Length: 241
Length: 263
Image 1 (cartoon, rainbow over the protein chains, first blue to last red):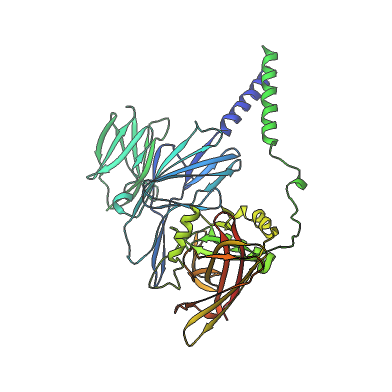
Image 2: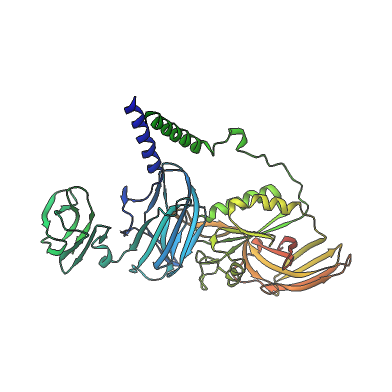
């Protein structure tokens, strides 16, 4: 009897704590709050004689565990950002501006936030563009429980070639043919690199809190993970030209 | 101790079931019947929109629905403005932003699209919030009668407009006259899809008598007639043109409005 009621109590507390959760999702994966996500999705719409429109899509959705009113704030770091979700209207957030919208979410729901960077109709062919926005979301009745994400939307190969990852526990970038890493604390971190077909092409221990290693990879696209044995603090893409 | 745990668990269970049922309503209480109304006047709906606004086609559909319901009593004008509008001086028949569009959007503080301003008394409002203010405005009486006629003169290339007004009380305000055009085929973003050939209706095209109109003073029961003309632009199709004329007051909003085709 004691065990039954303890279990019920635990289940109730778990339900309540789960019910507080909001998370950002992209490509079916949950994105850690505070991390940076790079999207190279762009829809190209030629419409002569007006020109061609390039619509960069963040592809980021908001997942809500419980029903409630949610506030989403956008701060544009670069580029005019369109935000068309939550309340049926579209707003534009200019560089340097911060705007927020409020809307109702249902329990156990996921909705595309419809965050885009729109060039408008331009005469340029194949322009290279980058936009950056910081989004923050929270339940209206829980402003102390905010989640945030830094989104970069770009078709610049210099930006998208390495999916630079910054999380609370890891910072991974690429410079001069080497992978540069920095961890919140030293530990046993293992880098694994896979080809797009899933074949592991490289595995190496990353020593210490920070450092860099040369990547002896042929031309192509690879996926990497950095594992510390208990969690997966970083993962991303590498394009070797 | 055991009793205390039982009590806490019971309270938590009760609380969670109470919180989850708070917003549930009986099915038959979720819908409110809208009774039919008899419009007492015409109402102006300024719909702020843009060709690159993914959510705007829904507003266009809502306007079409309201026009079907209220007929000539609902006079809608689509004003393309802001970052979601398309501007191209070389192809104005395909790019529907006009210079006054942003001026009007700034006046009403339009920051979200689509948005509507109803009789310049209510708004800006999102589409979901239009129906009740529209109904309320349609039921308001007005002392002003206003009619307009518009004719295109081929020889001069001008649209000649006559506006007749009579008020049952003395009133002062501003008379504003616009040219609008329907059946314009141009692009429109609809959700994630760009529709290259979308039909745009009652699109604001030009002001006839200034961006904010002109002062008008009326004596009770004394008719007043005003005449205007405006050169038809090459890219306007005469058969799709209309003239919208309305008298408005800065604080009281639109006193009355009328619309007529250009024949």
